Length: 214
Image (cartoon, rainbow, N blue to C red; front, side, top):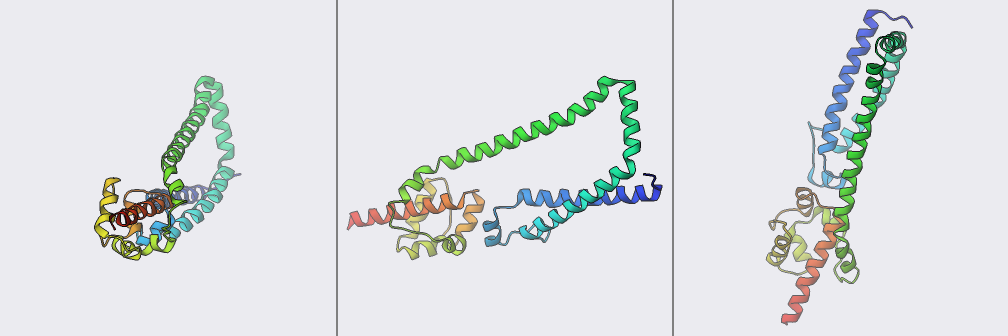
């Protein structure tokens, strides 16, 4: 397909603009906490919340697909000529130019798989909390995890706020009475269900200790 220099220039400029937009929103989504935490603490990136970032990133992705299609359509003949010329001049370099991007994609996939595997291993370390919560008489709701402070949670179950903070500190979690549970979850990158179960276990143990003293 023959195309004027102006059309090629406009398509390339639009591709650059969309690429920058995708890069910015992609970085924002990478840095964003989980949806529930982001909503609880009012997290934003460049004035956009996580939902807005996701929508913009998705729309820009579809625009990128269309622009890439147009770019390939108007430049396919030139690309084909350059590839044939490269194979004729140096097959080794041409093959390397095709193989290297494939290898980079494979390495990236392996790194992503390793990362997600580590997350699963980390989650597995909290299995004991789930087992203990099955026999616990304490039940913390999702709304509590979303809106309650440490002090409000302690008052809800009639336990000492200082005792709750002390038990959290034993597990490497520093907290203050007026700090929201959602903020602690975000700051320490905790899984919500695991954190909830941990708190249930802590409160149950505090209650058990108080009953023994009585």
